[in-house]
Image (cartoon, rainbow, N blue to C red):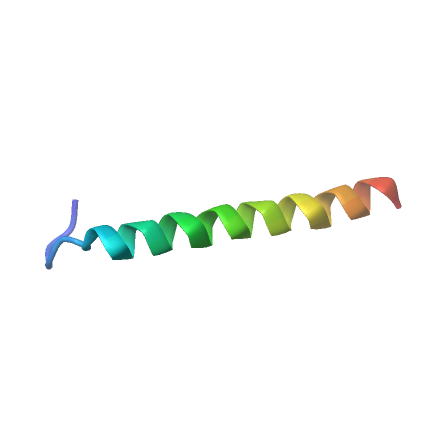
Length: 36
C-alpha cells in the first residue's frame, strides 16, 4: 500500500484501540446531538 517499515503488532493494537475510541466518542456525540 505504501512504502516504509511495516507497523509492529504493538503499533497495530494501538491504532485499532485509537480508532475504536474515536468511533465510540463520535457515537456518543452523535447520540447526544440526536437526543437534543
